Length: 379
Image 1 (cartoon, rainbow, N blue to C red):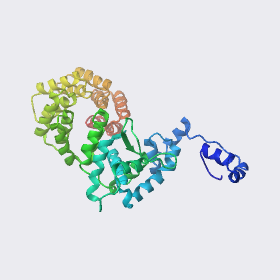
Image 2: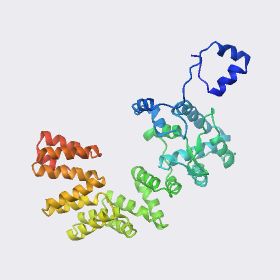
Image 3: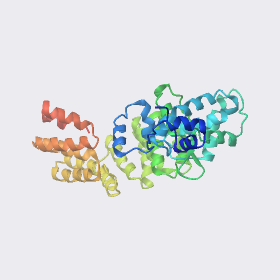
Image 4: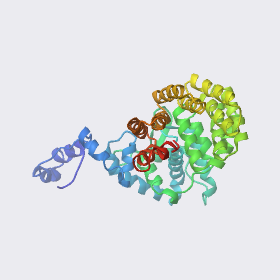
């Protein structure tokens, strides 16, 4: 094999340049499509544990996998070297801002005004003032390289940009050794995705995972600015930190704005605080009527505690029908306590298929230690 080239390059060298035409004229070309078949993609996905392929799994901003794998390493090298070149430092940090915003969960396109403010967060780390303008830095970062892509690619909406996938994957693969995302980047990420409910959830979830105490400050500011849908997140953080009174305050605030999840979580907090059963069940019913998927399961446990197993089954089945894996798990426990091991194993199996890893432990105990142990496993 002499090498690979695109159709346009082959035509130019084969039919227009005499010297290269003589070389290519003696070669039998093999045409390969950039687009992979379903079978090829299926084989590719089997290698998702390969670090070099993770970014390609996530997608390459509209490029094919072939192009992604070919250009990714080159883009990473160019981006890292730009940090050393004084004239391109602004472009380097524009790309870094887009990468860090993606690490925060803001994917799919960053508005250019958010990107402008986000990249300024790195100014304090610069040993000198960048000589290039923002516009020049953006032009450098978006310039198409190797005929494939720029380091920044267009997002889904106009005037939005995002980091090419291989650059994000390269940084994320560094794990704990990667530079921390600046604290003030999180509100930028939240602003970048504010019109996208899924995007907000993604950013909030990542903030809770990686910078929970710092993120709390920004969630409070967002709530104070009128973004009430972060109130449940603040309540969840306080619940994680075992501060039930604070959690209750924020759950009630979220509940006042119609958040069914907050209503369900408020009932759980009041249960921990020993509040009357009637009030707790009232809140669970409110949450269930508003569509919260796990509230029926909680109502089932309340009914079971009262000794009404038939009502408990109805609520567990309702939770399972809504997609709550805890419903299938609770039905497994119920069946075993009734002496039906086969049905219990079937329901635990369904819970496991839905992602409930405690069900695996329950099945193992069911087979080895007896049903009493399996029935006491917590979902």
